[in-house]
Length: 342
Image (cartoon, rainbow, N blue to C red; front, side, top):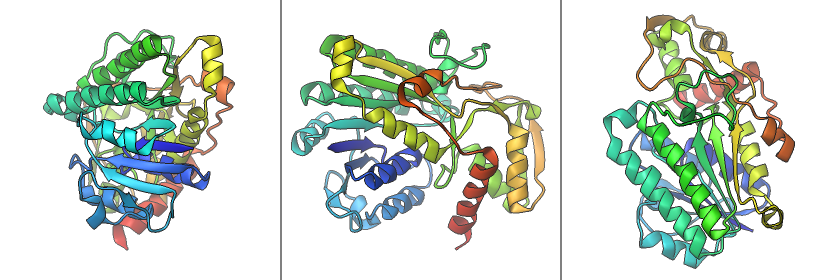
């Protein structure tokens, strides 16, 4: 079984690759390694997978892992490339596709809208076309809790209306869901969208709150706490997320055909909401440093509270996130200290 994982140099993509390799799947990673945040972190993730920076820098060339012999290879490529992507599908003959590549960041989408349309919409269309033309057995793709917008009903359910996104990033993710539905309906392609909530853990992105908080607190600099601390998030440890993605990937295509339900959509999170100030407190305790908090109003594109209803994922895949905030933050700060200072 050969699986394409796009966004393989990204935070979640890296962890999904690691898990799939531990499960003895053959994995091909793809990433364009853009400079939205420090590319050295992306290259370091790839190094953990056995791909050296000098090799990963080359576009469209296949690089074999030096430590995952015959089981992991990597291509640097843009999903928007309508010529190279179909050639890759033809050459590699994938069974499954896990599309985790996207231009991330809610606030950045306000500044650079064209980047989001190119990557998240044009790129996703190209993935769908390749799945259509190359008999892919199952496409799993990353959506986002941001599609819920200003939804006040807690916890968020996939049955809720998501017609009012408050950022372009959210709008592109909702577009992905609609596009996947269309291709599942027209071409009988099994697709599953996963609405990720707030994912954290080792190798996390430096533009996300856990990294920003840990970095500032460790340097005894002020941290920005938006909405004056009145924020709650469904924080989910990245290894729990990777396990969920792994379970969903193994869908039985025949069952989808039998039920005539090729399109599925799930929330994937921790099934609880944690106060941002409590999360910060765990970071403080693990760093043994008190945070200097700068209280600020809520930012455009942000919401006060997120909480995933994951009942369907539990029922259909026996998904069970087990990592507590206390343990998850402990493991995150352990990685943070080692990565930052050694």
